[in-house]
Length: 131
Image (cartoon, rainbow, N blue to C red; front, side):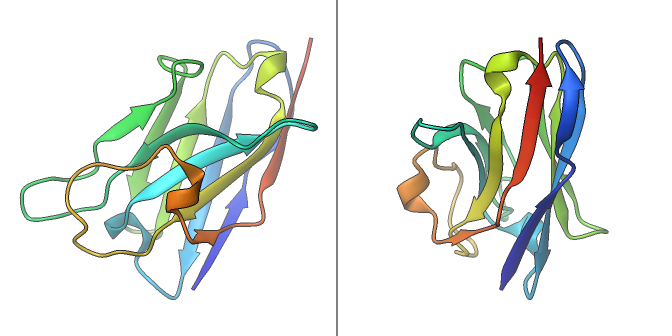
């Protein structure tokens, strides 16, 4: 089981990035996934999350207030990835971004914004937004 984030980089204020979380060893889009970020000297905070797929529910995302209307989480079943589309980036969005999963199949609707609920993490990808 492995998660790998990619797509980070240096952008100017107002720019956009697409971060990718790739799963290996399991079919990532079917599982609950959270996106988190951590800036230097700060605690890890939630960016958003999306629930897994079940018989009566399928991938409804939640977002933190700080990124709502700017960031979008989506699933790619073909590539076994999740994406975090980040638009309107601000200097305060500068952080290492992580994806995580609890690896629980058919877990029911809903996802967690609490990083302690997730057991499997990627190594992170750096996003730097210049002013």
